[in-house]
Image (cartoon, rainbow, N blue to C red):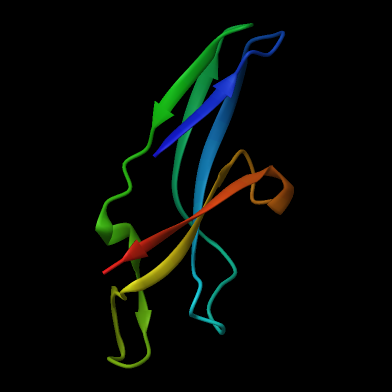
Length: 96
């Protein structure tokens, strides 16, 4: 997962956060923090970071089997510097 950040006027640290939600789970959480990476950038610096997001990160509670497992379906991934919806870029991923 790539996220491009930076090009500010002063040095700073940013925490890029990755949230996830199972779109079919209407009773589950609206978003769950699944990964993050702290990045320090110098003034004017821009950097593309990569955050591993293996299949295991999609694990959640399956009410049908009463166990934690990767449930196939469509998941919404949200990437940004906070959990606020306005800060998040969203896209869908299908797990089979």
